Image (cartoon, rainbow, N blue to C red; front, side, top):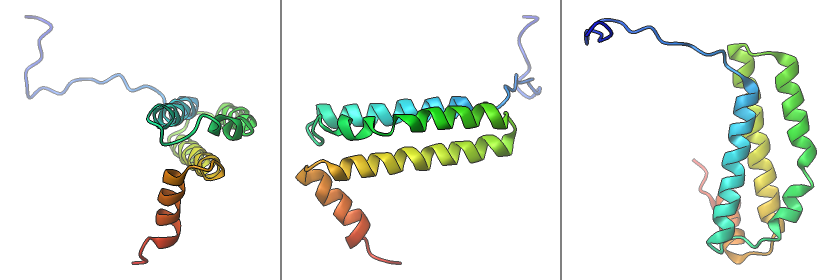
Length: 117
């Protein structure tokens, strides 16, 4: 019972340094997982990988940026947002290049028909 903390007693948390490279890897894995899910459910054809493969240097650029800028809180946030925007942009470009009627309807609705507020 020596190691048990009282419910109201503060617990020390091991705070890890924010690593921007971790965010880049995380967004990359989420991006690849979403594309695989869309492939296996038939929403997107497997040819989408030929379009995505054209952007492989982006991974090198994002990894290099995360190494150069360090691991500060603000820097990690900026690199994370940049990574997210980059992967979403590559995804939209790649999905738009594939001639899938479902993807075309989704992209057309979200980009063109979405009501302006």
